[in-house]
Length: 348
Image (cartoon, rainbow, N blue to C red; front, side, top):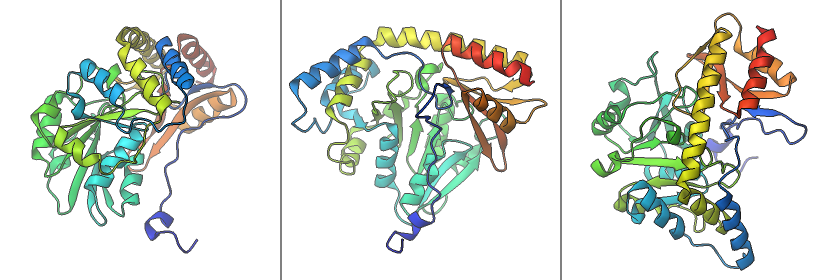
């Protein structure tokens, strides 16, 4: 196709985790929540359907921002909503990074970040994590053309995270804004929301896909100072959140009792999964997310992934050149975790 921009033609494109459309799989590969969302979500969506879908939705998802404001302790005008947190990442990249400029990200981390840079005709600079999954001052070093840095916290695939103090130190050193991607923060011991008040340069993105069990709904949001939100609103699509997703996400974030209960179940199963994998000879990185990253001491990761797939259990095999490979395994329900561990045992 000769009319496509050269940057697009040269891209490999983002490859999401497998989403089988037929048959029955135990799906532990894309960090989805194994439990149904709050019952309030269904009621809110049904009420919206009864009112009809003939009119455009609220372009700023005001109902969500008002409820989330109370939950998060920030004013509503500090919140920008999007069609999943991927939409938020796209909006921020559009706003800050131009053609020929530079986006910085840690490695290994979320592979979509590089794709977003390529779409802008920009370059992505990857700064390697240290062996203990920390970042040294090289991540904050000035460089000509550096316009934005992404920091997944907790990180994928490792499930590790930096402390708020460490994040603030990096942000203060960076010559550009820092987006802290907190897709998995509800499963962690701490988060960086409070840092947004301390620095205009710090933004925090969240998703409703993981901890609220709404991956199919597609709703995410950003917390940043209002003067930043004002500029980002210029860049987003006019109606980037539909009426059903706004209603469902608003009901979900309002039900904090459900979130606390779900979080407790996920953390308990995460501990069981980690212990079970370690008993089978895996080295498991301590996780702050709803997944674990592991490598076996004597068995290669890719054959194990393929053998599990043959048994209709999907995990994520990930290979990072210059770093290594391993398995990222989502924390499922207890029965899914038991099935995984039982199936793995004879393979080892």
